[in-house]
Image 1 (cartoon, rainbow over the protein chains, first blue to last red):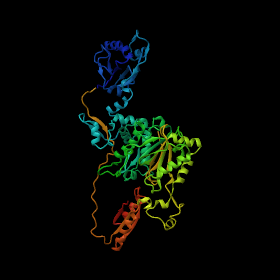
Image 2 (image 1 turned 180 degrees about the horizontal axis):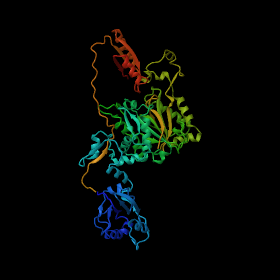
Image 3 (image 1 turned 30 degrees about the horizontal axis):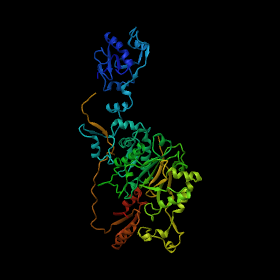
Image 4 (image 1 turned 45 degrees about the vertical axis):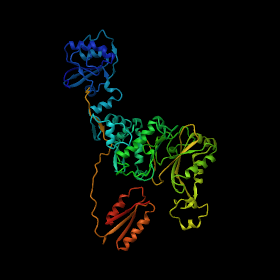
Length: 485
Length: 97
């Protein structure tokens, strides 16, 4: 591109009635022989009758001159812009060109049209094209003849399913989903203890299929899962089933369209699916946590939630306060909770119509978490509307429900001994005092401590069901934090 | 616009760390005069195995020092690692289950 030293520059596109309107004006200015350069954004044959139109379909000139409206007319003096007018205004055009009587037969004023270089999504494409992204991560060039989807599999970047190619433009768009700086380190990710910046999180969120509006939830999930309380390293390398499970409370879950209703733990909701997946990809790609040969994920069996495990509480349909409110947040605060999820145990009770009956059902099903003889467990009990309605009608609080379940899950030590019920699982050692009282049914050990059992309302309007999601342990595997914009 | 086939430019999602391979320390030819650290990661019932190792070392006149992590799921605190490095010549770290 030649540097413009002195004279006028017009930027136009054919797909703009005001640019069509000023065609004769541009011809007239050219005929007068003044220095005028015309850049066209969409059609090098436009404006007709003007020689030497400069093809700016690549938008380099428009991008650098920050053109927002066409037509734009700029006056340069000694290489510097001194004046600019947008759209058509007879007085302004006459002033900037110094041509009296210019466009006397045209209407006095017509607004212009949006320039192509500022169309939605274009800003990021052009920033990438002209190298102004600010992205500091390494770039990987995939040759045109190589399928990028295969190239990403080959580099080990995926969880086994295809990922969205993280182009610079997509990463820039993701970064616009937060006010946080791209270079902010949000977590040290196990097992490699690698620093995860907002930028690296954005790359993986793109790959997971997130929209930018989900990104604050992704960032909070990463910070919390990799924070000091959750124990992500242990969750990753355990032989057990655990994976980080994200539960979102607060208005953001509704604003971004998360699912808390029908099929809440199932497929098809983009926000639920991609937020959980983004966290998994961060642990894989940034932290280096992988299953398979040489990987530190030593899970014996695992479950499909290791692709993604994320859902929202049904705060509007719940008879109870949310998890976030239980933990001291206000209902208008957005909160991410991270649990360990060992997979879903579906629970049916189509007959009980009282809190007492449902408590008995829940307690029996919760008793078998991990193994009937394993105590001090953790679990999330997710209850669907056709069960919660009975607690609402009977005026039961969440605390009352939880206390009633825990009371039923004080397990007599006798039933926890190896050999009881014919299997050899059970307590590895007991004290002499416990041994002396083995026949005493009041000598018990809790299946759950109060903090180990959490209850949320979610699920579809039809179906007398609940779900138990076992967790890893109380020592690791639970934390929460407010979601920052 | 340029209509030729172009490379697709992707942004690297990884930490961009490089693996570093380090040789293991030389194994001692003899335990004579050395102090052996035994670190229990606190996973049940690892201490049964570690207690027996302690006995076997002690029977042979090897000086043993015992350490434990706060919890098996958590990384050993830096202070603990530094203490072991300062006080021991070799260390045995026991897994369990």
